[in-house]
Image: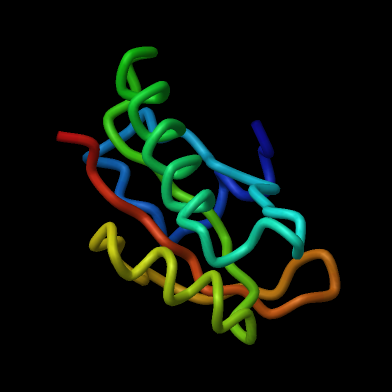
Length: 96
């Protein structure tokens, strides 16, 4: 949990509680094998099992690889913010 991220006004409160997926990374030697997508899928399933209605997270707006990875899941970009000395896109998706 990150209270600062949860407090951002861009999140749709109608699909709360929302869980955050954060700090997902694949070591460079293992990239381009679909591992990030598998981790994201597992994270979304785990959040749903725990009773969350949505998932949200921040992505550095210049991280093209991550943005391409998340596009597969149909996340909505619901805002932008500047936190932790970085510019982020705010991604959100209802867990169905």
